[in-house]
Image (cartoon, rainbow, N blue to C red; front, side, top):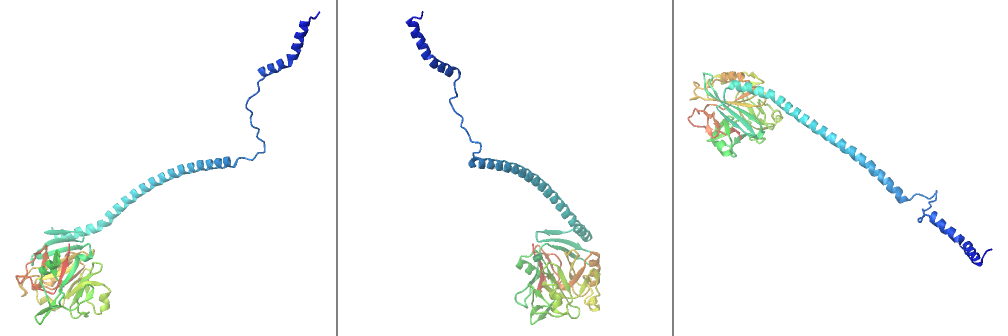
Length: 354
């Protein structure tokens, strides 16, 4: 028999059963507290995220390109440096090789002249002084290399008719060396340059066509010796002389002796001489021969001068004023022995500058 107490207990058990079941479910089957967002399958991609990814790809590509470019530049630089070094070596060798013929030629010239007594060298000019003593006469030779055309000039007084010694012209102009140049004519107590004379590219007394045995000799704008007989102005103009003077006669042309007029073979036969010539490399050679008078018994003949010039390998050569006019100055000293005992004042001088 069910007592009232048991009935009450059964009632409460039945009433609490659902709650007890719910508690047990909560205890054993606990749900997640955070819910995952549900993304629709067809939701469009975020544009910011898409652009960021694109930029990242571009940056990665740029980085790879930069690495490749840097490597390429490094290789190119190494190749450039190697090529430059190689080219520099080639240029140096080529320069040395190109200079060899000139050096060899100069040694041949020097071997014929002997040992220089004195030497002047600068960026503009090289001068070497030698003794000339073949036995029949004595004198000096001066070999000159013009590195700058302006290193040779001609002195001429600004007032025509005036003259000065070569030493005076050298000191007045600050030159390192000098020789007498063209002939002259005396008139009224004054001394004028003979025939065609050019100074600073201009004709001093206009052009005079060559006559008799006269010639013109001077330097052009390229620093080369030009000379010869000119029967019309255009022929001389084409050579572009910057300065020059006139005398007689021509001694050498194109490496060969010229025919000396009979008059100049004996008038005088021997005399102090001043001669200017050039080698095939445009170096100049000046020879000044001593003599103790002008009566024809001392000094050199023009034929002897030709023989000496030919032996020394001179290409073109011109006889300048001689006798008492012959003078050679170097380093403010009179090198030769003037036949007058003193230097003669003359209108024109060829000067050389250090």
